[in-house]
Image 1: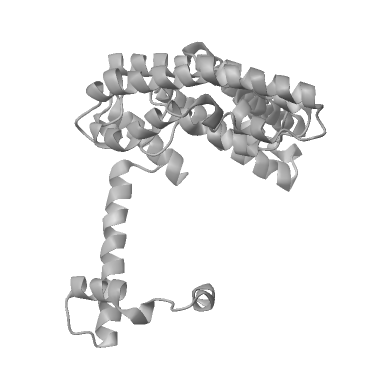
Image 2: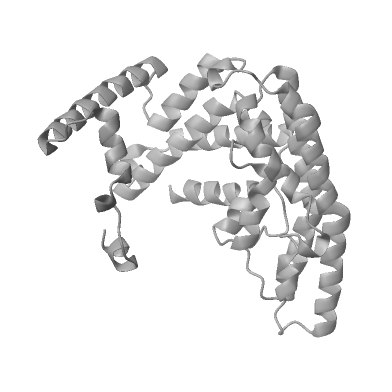
Length: 310
């Protein structure tokens, strides 16, 4: 039974080389993710095949740990398939992050010790423009379908696209690993690596960032929605319900039920807060008490040690 978990993990690393690097697996450090529609379709087919294998297992034959692993994997696969049907890859960024700044985290997780590490990194840099172009093509499909982010977030996220294409090649964050090549790599080889890295950043990476930033500014932002919320997207209600089931881990959850529960909890908490305020003898209203908590010196540490203690 354990073979399915090993196979799934291996597949996940191969399909998402950025996550593999972040997980400490260096076998795919020479790759960027493949995110074209056919790649996503292939992953859905893989998820279905793993779910079929999982369903074929006899639960009675599994030990306690394997049963837990099977339950977790079934949850992952089931929601991968359900959410995948909505093609969420047409929106590959959020209000504060996205495909365009993933490489910064990947570089921080990459080990640079041997010449082979730099050789792999050069291949990854060379693959980066195609990765950006695939994401842009996916977003163009999203624009055509009306499956786009709201205008509300664009002002905040656009500068992060522009910033990636602005530095001089030698100052670009993705060139930084070449500024600290270990002395164990022969000097002549180190200079060649630096030269190749600088050329890639200058001629491939920065232009890819600039193309992507121009697309975001000139095409995507004007097409962004005036309304905030997944419900405004095509099939939005069904997509939102699927997200609710995923994030609550409850198959019986509905958006309406969760909203009612939220209102009920807010009312309960507010009642408890009012009771605490009354107990303190505070004479002002609720807003005044909030201001009191946020501004009164007694609630703030006065020394570094006191901050650590509190």
